[in-house]
Image 1 (cartoon, rainbow, N blue to C red):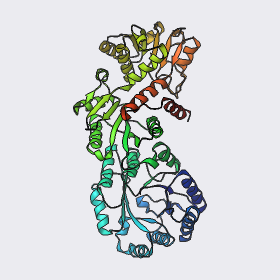
Image 2: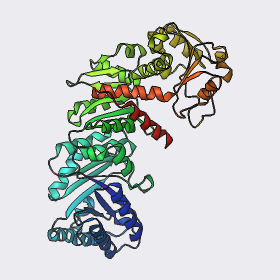
Image 3: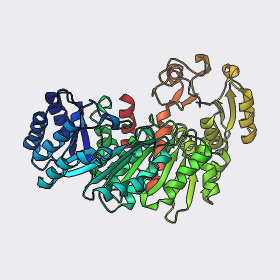
Length: 519
């Protein structure tokens, strides 16, 4: 079994009891008493805490007791002899696990008391840990074998720092390839997925904090996120994986949306935020890493800034199949891994936008020969312009950098004009493809209010806030409006269908997004 553990990092016994209560109420399957945080620490305080846990939550509720060396991330610099006495006392009081540093355990004078207490304990196990808060391990598999050779009954715990998401694979490989129990994952934002996947690959424990403020290591996510967003109760060795590749990725709502959709449909699937920093070479290395490890079970990816062009190039380089319009757009935002490993690249951005427009104007056919003004010439604009032209619309692109607008217009056979000419817009459909008006700068609009008129349709691809200043002005002038949420939900629904072969619950997905925006 892989436990979801919450570290208890209180300074007093009373605060620790409160934290334990909150951890259990939040769904913790194990608590780690980080006794190195307790001020004026004594064995009696630790024994009382263990007795409290076993008395309040049952004798079978597991407890790890740790009194960490400051050199390995400990809070208070207690002497090693005292820390050993704390661990021995914890074993005698019924602790299920004690955690001691491997570097200190190999010192002969530090072993005897712990070994005797372990021999006398009915169920107590020793976790021998090693942390690197600065870097990866040069040879994590070799260090694992070294620990077990030195003390075979131990559970090795090897925690290192990931500078890039590609550093996670050493720890994942160790978990997959070892037959003995161990704990392994990477710290830091780049290592976040290894904490979640440790659960899938059978790590004895993985850790979540009570809150961001109470995290005891870099990159620790909260138990609320672990349970609610990443569905920790449902993760097992057969869980299929998906994720959004981006930089940055922390702000993305996609994990919450897709995981909620998977839960609603009762699919054993998990969607992760995949922070892939760097250029094409880094993207390629990450994709090669996940795809050559078929046992990880990655079946599909959403792709956003800055990797949409990299995704297109990668699928082509691997002999995959690209959706024709995605090829013309020059960007892929969805990759599906076929049963035989073949890759398929799609762009659901344009399709999501066109569907949102079609629902408002009475069908895709109404776009044929329609005058459309598009503000912006970036990636979103490129995808939407391609879809509009494919539907037969007459498009004019307005952009601050005229050279960029001309380049886009030439590729798709459109007209263009500088942004200072937006006051002359006389189109049936106006689309904002810029970030102007996005929170927190929601008091801005990309066009002056006098552009709007009755009978016009105004579409803002910005969805936070849901009603932008642009849309408020349009409504005031009698225009029809389309908010960015429609496009976002549409493209997510299309990705969901590509990932699962089934249609998602549109109402449920929309409500999930609205809940996230409200928070």
